[in-house]
Image (tube, rainbow, N blue to C red; front, side, top):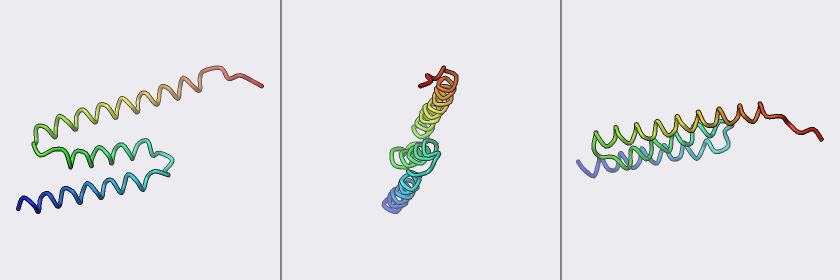
Length: 85
């Protein structure tokens, strides 16, 4: 029974890694590659429910911080004066 669960976890993580690789040429790759990568990491790394919740919360807030930082950096780039040649 234990090896069956390990097989299912590894194969599911491989599927999510393939999903991440397939999104490399997507225009919004910065959303999907980390999302699929985090899911694959959660599947492979965790075996305890409490550890999974802590890891998921940490990944979620780091990803949210990344999206917010990217949004504001894009706004700052658009608001900065551009040099005319």
